[in-house]
Length: 77
Image (cartoon, rainbow, N blue to C red; front, side):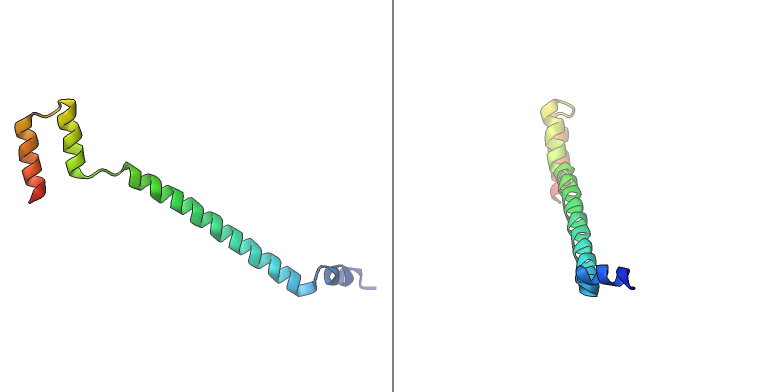
């Protein structure tokens, strides 16, 4: 009387179990990759180059034209 064995064979036996675990691992890998990609794109959007930062500071009036030109020269070296 091997009822448990018959139930397992009805689902494909060991092959079905292996396919299930492979599918589960693939799903986890894809979800992790998507999560990582979304985080890296967010961090790329937030980064500004130094020249962009001084342009914004100049546009907002935090620095004057002389200071802007000097900082721009320093960054271009």
